[in-house]
Length: 244
Image: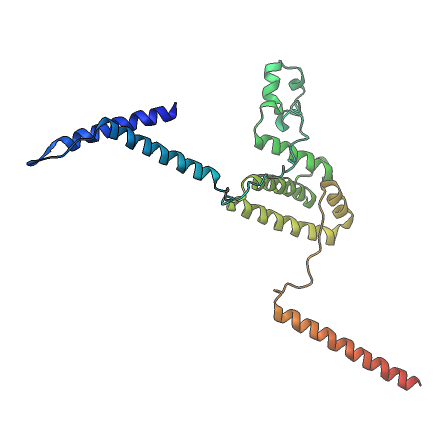
C-alpha cells in the first residue's frame, strides 16, 4: 500500500513537471514528458528507494548510545511507617482514636506529606536515645535529628544526583554530626555506644594527620622505611658482636 502511494505521487509529480516543461519560456517551447517516460522514471525512483532501504537494513547496528543503567533501589527510612499511625501532633490526643473514618484519614499518615512523615521518623529516633521524656536539646537528640535528615538527603540524592544544593546541606549535616559524636565519645562514652547502636551509625576514626598523597611523598616514605630497616639490621649485628 505504501509503495502504491509512492508510485502514484511520483507519477503525478512527473506529469506536473512535464506540463511545466511544456510551457512557454520566452520564445522557446520545451518538449513535455510522455506517459511511458513518466512510468519509467517512477519505476526507477521506486527501485532506488527500495535499494537504499535494503542497504540500511543490512548494515550492522553501531552501538553509539551508552547502555541504560538501571539504578538500584535505595531503601527509604520511611518504609516502616504504617499508614494507620497518627501524626505527631495528634498522637497525644485521646479523641483522635474515636473519630470518624474520613476524619481519621486526615489525622493519620495515609494522606500525610513527606515532611510530616519525616517529622514522625525524627520523633521515633529521638525516643530511642533521649535521656528522659522532656529531653529536647541534648547531644544525643541532636545526633538523632541529624541522622534522620542525612538519610533523607541520601534518598533524595540517589534520585537526583545533580542536586548540588542538597548535597552541600547533606555534607554540612554529616560534618556537624561527626563533631557531636566526637564530643559525646570524649565526655560520655556509654551514651556514645548506645547512640551508635540504636541509630545504626558506624563511627570511623579520623586520620592522624591530613596530607595529600603524591608520588614524591610515597617514594620518600618507601625510601625512609628502607633506610630504617637497614639501620635496625646494623644495630642488631653490632649487639650480637658485643655479646659474642
